[in-house]
Image 1 (spheres, rainbow, N blue to C red):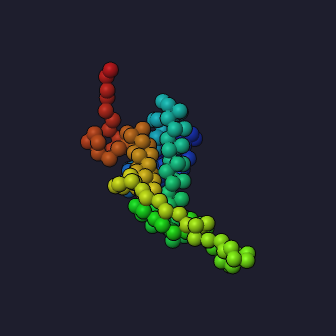
Image 2 (cartoon, one colour):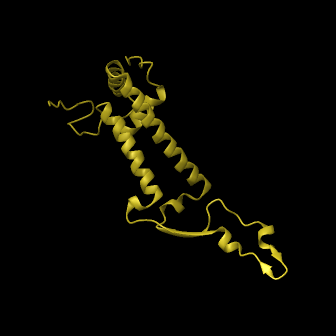
Image 3 (cartoon, one colour):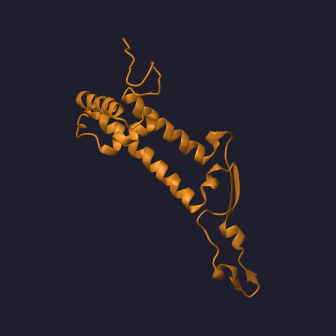
Length: 162
């Protein structure tokens, strides 16, 4: 029987932990994860608060990326360099017709930007976001002793004597 989840945790937290660890939603795995989460809640309520903050941040970053994918402009965050209209800017008909006597406004300089990112995956916004999401998820799993096989399997911690 799956134990009740400690009230410091949200049900969505347990689902996130299961997803981060790639654990199947079976009775035995749910029991194992719930017991670990309850143990952390019993010994360190502050750790629960921190884990929930990490989960919320990872969820927010994933939602932002999903929104960019849905809007069709997520690829811009993967570009090493970009030149074009400022993201979100659009040239209006009035802008294109901006003319007073012989003076004509240059809408290209008004709305265009050019930027170049650094090298490698950490040089793009998508790379940085993905790395941050992975880091946050890893922090949650390590706090619960569920890191992917790091010490021989899920739920096995490492005893460190100082």
